[in-house]
Length: 177
Ligand SMILES: [Ca+2]
Ligand SMILES: [Ca+2]
Image (cartoon, rainbow, N blue to C red; front, side, top):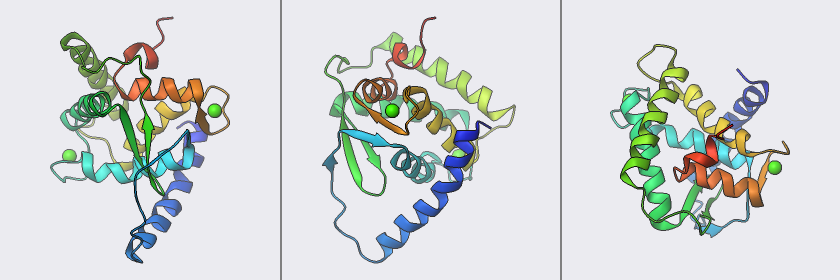
């Protein structure tokens, strides 16, 4: 496992627990706010929280179908709403760059599905599902790919390419070189 991801994952459990206890204490201040950047901690908490939502059949692992449909649904939703919601310590909304088309075209969708299936195979090592840490690792890899200066925060161009990748713009996440 990538060293940065490993360190990041050990920190996320504590943060997620802190968030959970806040929620139990009746913190109803959670409201959508627009954010200009995305710190790694927020992406990690979001990744940890999303596992249960992605594991539709509640078997404790994310299978190829769940993994692939999640990629497509998130991309479609991002385009339609022109934003990506991050469920971190606070719920924040990141605005999608204007040049991403509103609709995920049919061929674009097919390509996205094919890449998601291949990505799943690579991550699952022949198993029929990803566990929570494998799932979080896949999410963090997208973050680290976008964080070109490696400072743990996505801003400006880094944030734009991250959001484009989330919205299924394949050229953003998979350089042609
Ligand atoms: Ca499952
Ligand atoms: Ca950065």
